[in-house]
Length: 96
Image 1 (cartoon, rainbow, N blue to C red):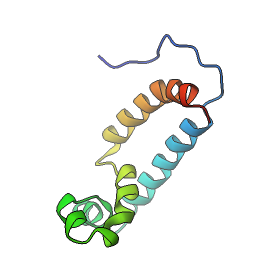
Image 2 (image 1 turned 30 degrees about the vertical axis):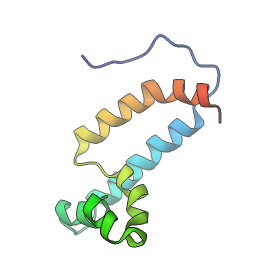
Image 3 (image 1 turned 90 degrees about the vertical axis):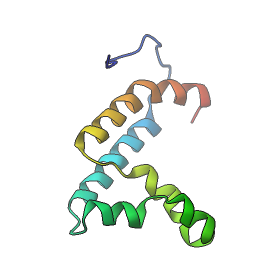
């Protein structure tokens, strides 16, 4: 079952949620336009736990970059759908 909406009204405009969705889409478009293979992209920008333990300082940027990697358009769209539906509620609770 795929949710299309939720029943919790929001009180504020979801600025951060929209920023995250836009960022994810832009980064995905950059990702698929790279001449690198998908494996090389995930190896370069993805978080590899063993490498994080071996050389933590070198791997710190991948903690953040790995959050924006998606394996395909379906993966991206599914994640963005859930972020759109539930992100505004979380943003309301946590505040801006």
